[in-house]
Image (cartoon, rainbow, N blue to C red; front, side, top):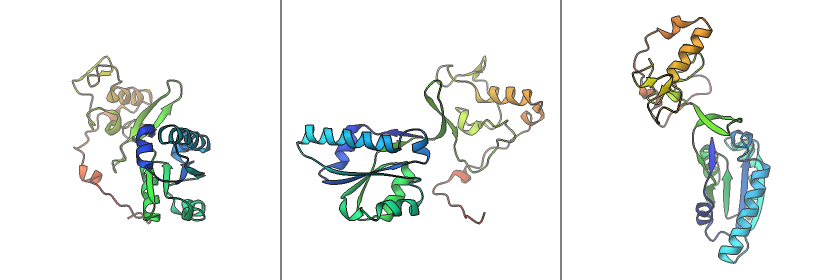
Length: 220
């Protein structure tokens, strides 16, 4: 999940750049309408207006969108032909996209247009985004009915619920959010798999979350 940075921050990072490429991402950011063609063109218009009003100048702005900014080959096919014409690239992808671009074009300023928040999903009915996965490296979803306690329990407990729940709500955050372990219990009960609920899970080995992590494409 990504969230657009405040325009003042973006303008400050653009600084005195005269030639800018706004590069969207049709991957995760595009799916949630933060990095697609429409958002790129809206950003272009917003920057043009702000630069003219606040700085009294015009910026030459190119725009494009790649299928996934986290894939260097996709970026290269779009950016290489125009990189010699830009002073900076404003990325409307996630933090991974920004870093891929920074590695590919070390002599070009890469500006993050988004704050990368978490791995989650949108509830379109409420318009809210919810964190569902911590990418922790040891998936428990089989045992928990497809509900991740690491991400969705405020205390990331691997066995629950704790004494901090009441009527299915969690004490953390003022009893407004569902207790993940009550959700897990209800899910497993519906599936007649409460035997999984009573499985004792040993404390998590947080070395699996130690950064920076690496993973071999061959599965090692």
